Amino acid sequence: MKRSAVLKNKTIIVGCSSLGATITNKFSTEGKNLMVIDKNPKNFERLSDRFSGFTITGDVSDQEVLEEAGIASCSEIVIVTNDDNLNLFVAHIARKIYNVPNIYIRLTEPDNEVLIKGMDIKAIYPLELSYDKFNVLRGGRK
Amino acid sequence: MRIVIANGNNGADYIIKSFKGRQHQLTIINDDRDVAHKLARNSKLPVVFGDATKVTTLQEAHIDGADIFIALGFRDTDNYVACQHARKQFGVKKCICIVQNPKNVAIFKELGLESVICSTESLVSSVLAESSLEALTKTMSFENDKIVMSEIVIKSNYAVANKRIMDINFPKEGSIACVYRRPRVIIPNGQTLILPKDKLFVLSTPSEQKSLIAFVQRASKK
Image (tube, rainbow over all chains, first blue to last red; front, side, top):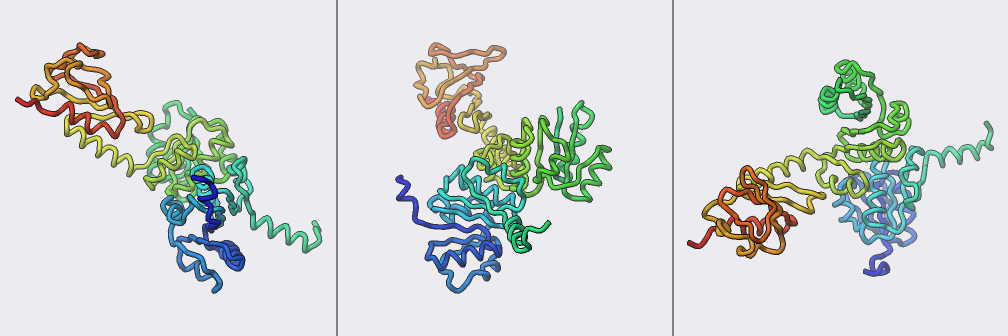
C-alpha cells in the first residue's frame, strides 16, 4: 500500500485531559479530522460545541482500542493522558508497530526522555513549560 | 545472582522466599507503604519504598548491572516502563515483565521485552496442552510457537503401523524427527519400520499440526 493512500490526514488525541481538550478544541477550528479517546466519557464534556470529530470511550492500554480509533492510518497522534507510563507505552506502539508519521507525547518526568530517544517522538513537558513561562514573567530573577 | 523484585504483594513475598538464601542477592522495591513494611518484616531484607517506574527510585535501589529484574505490579504499562528503564538505563541483563492482559504478551515482546508472563495466557496454554494430551499427543513449541513438536504413540490399529516410512506417504508439511522405541532412540530414514508402541516425534508448523496428527492416527482400513 502506498503511504499516500494510508494518510487520511486524521489526528488521534489520546486522553481528553485539560491539555487534550484544549488541543482538540484548537484543532477543531482548523478543520482537522479528529478522533479523541478517553476512558472516562465525562471528560468529553470539556470539548467545545465546535468540535465535530469522533470520540471513543476506551482504555488505550488495550491495543484494540487504538485499532478501533484507526491508528494504522492516522497521520498524527497526540498522546496526552496524565499518566507518563501509559503515554510512553502508546507512543512506542505508535512508532514500532504502526509507524505513525507524527507522534507527540506529554511527559511529566524529564527522566523519561531517554525512553523515546532516537525514536522520532516529540515530547511536551507542560510543567516545565509553565515554569519557564513563569520564570520569564518574573524577569528570570533567582 | 542479583535479582530485583519490583512491586507486587503476595507474588513478591513468594518469590522473595523462594530465592532468599540461595546465594542470590535480592533487591526489593515497592510503591505501597504497607506492603513494603510487610515484605521487609517477612524477609528481614531492606526494602526500597518508591515508584519503580521512576529513574530516581531505581538509582536509589542500585539496580545497575543486576542479573534479573522482575516487574510484578498490577498495571501492565507500569511494569512495561519499569522494565524498559531497567534494561536501557541500568544495563539489567534480563527483565521479566508480568502482565494482566494476555494480549500484551505479544505486544510487549514486539516492543523489545523478551520475557513477558501472563497467568491467564499460561493457564490457557496449559489447558490446551492437556487437551491434546488426551488425544495421546504431547506438544512442545519452539521459537515463539512457530515450530511445534508433537509426540504420538502408535497403536496397532493405525494405518501407519508395521509399515516403512517410505511407504506411508507422509505429508511433506511435516517431518518425523525421531522415533523412540524403548530403550532405543532411532533417527529415522525411509527404511525405518514404524511399529506399534513406537513414539513418533513429528516437527511441523502449528497450522499443520492437527492434520499431521490425524494422518498418523487414522485407522487402517481392515
